[in-house]
Length: 185
Image 1 (tube, one colour):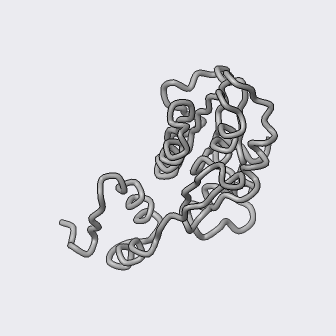
Image 2 (spheres, rainbow, N blue to C red):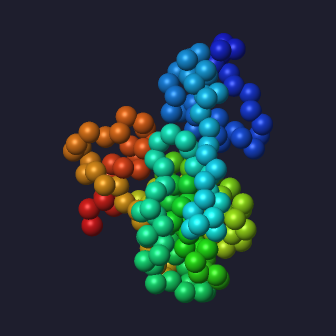
């Protein structure tokens, strides 16, 4: 039976945040205490054109996803797959740049996929930008091979089993190559 020290009460809408916090923060009472201090930051991309929430700790979007979105030669009516979308920075910037573009993101960290979907809704992209949690090697239903006009990814920069991975688990997933080998094409 769980002790009261291992429980955290949150509103239903914040359940995914609580799961993310607890997964990243250790165990027991220490986990619960640290969870209270973990939060999201409200940031902006493209000079404020895109509102963007992201975890204060772990991987944080910088210029890479903004440049990636700027480099995609996509047009209205086309569909883009964002593989490893995280909290959605690249997909959101691309959708802001190209009205009428459809973007579908897949992210292995379920909590970040839910945050990305929330970010899409807050930016008014809910109808044409969608995120799901899943693995690109075993995509969920609806991801049909060769059904996208473009595929983007902000790949990990560390080859698997090399160097020193970041100690933060969420940042390690973003920065260290996984089974898909997206870091070294």
